Length: 218
Image (cartoon, rainbow, N blue to C red; front, side):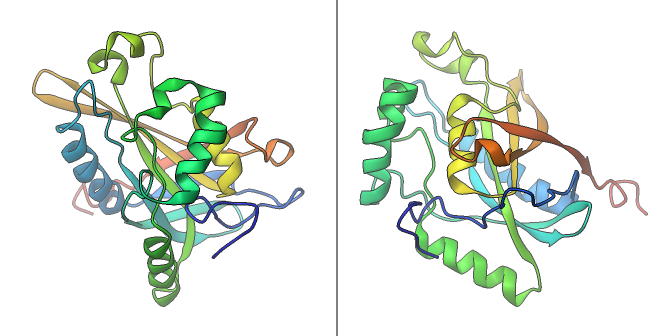
């Protein structure tokens, strides 16, 4: 779980060039519900000075044509405490993507011990560690004036594309969350880093389906 070329908080299973990535993502509603509950909780605490993130790992099954997400695993954010994280943000992310990322509340770096715990949990359950899911709030509405120019959605930002490539996870889900009045709404999209852009230059969208059988009482 360590690497000399990838920081511990970012490492994931590599996707070698030529390896076929499943084209469809299936998510169980319980897994999505667990993430949405956490995301709404974090969203309620966001202020213009604290763009709090929400991040989780995706555990499930990787099959020939599909990823099937069965559960999510949460961990601590070591963005402000891990020396490797602090160096990555100072040396690479802030110079490349702007001073907004100097804010230690912006960005996620999963604690390496929690990453290892999630990997063991997946192995014990007969599941694969597929990738990650993170929240995009409507920061362009509630952030400071300097944040109003970039409209967030379920699509990856340049920073997301960079991290998707650096991490090497074959599956990366973005959950866009916004509040309208007293109600919350969300949108989802799934992404895979393209092999030729493994350094973080691009990604491909995957078809995504959320299981609805339990919602229908089936």
